[in-house]
Amino acid sequence: MIKYITKCEYSPEYKYNRPANRRAMSILVALIVVSTLIMLATVGLKISSDEAEITSYDLYAMQAQLSAESGLMHAAASLGGDSSFTSTVYGTMEVAFANAAEPAVTNPDDPEFDERRFAFYEAQITLNRSNETGRILSTGRYMGVTRKLSAEIEKISPLKLKKAVISYE
Image (cartoon, rainbow, N blue to C red; front, side, top):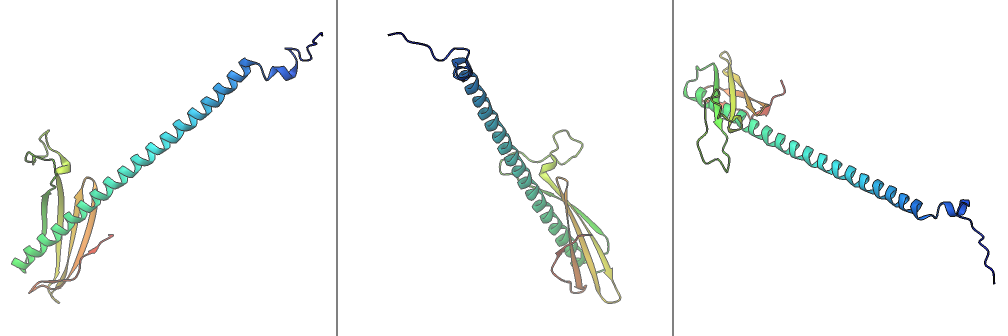
């Protein structure tokens, strides 16, 4: 019996079934899958680095807030000791690190100075002698983040403060 070839190598049906074309299609699909995975990994890394940055900013803001509270307490203590005290008090707080074994370098000009080890505050006392009231405005700074607290003085002598509130001035 004679077999006749009904499909020629050069016919359109055979064109898409050649081994070389199948290999090319599988390489193309593999490249698309790999590039999609790389894009997903890049997006995942970007999201995680953004989250870490947000978390560190929150920690800096909390330390600045604590520094502002310390300034408020320093000003209140100064005013409690001398009811005629009207000035600005400044202070530096050392921020403790769990792994910091050696003492902090306190001179900002020293190359070993690490600004992460210190938070700063400034508290301004304003008094109104006519009605024995006033206000304390304290600003805390840490790693470029600033927080302000304001406390109204209900009475100067003996010192009585209202609850401190965040100031958005």
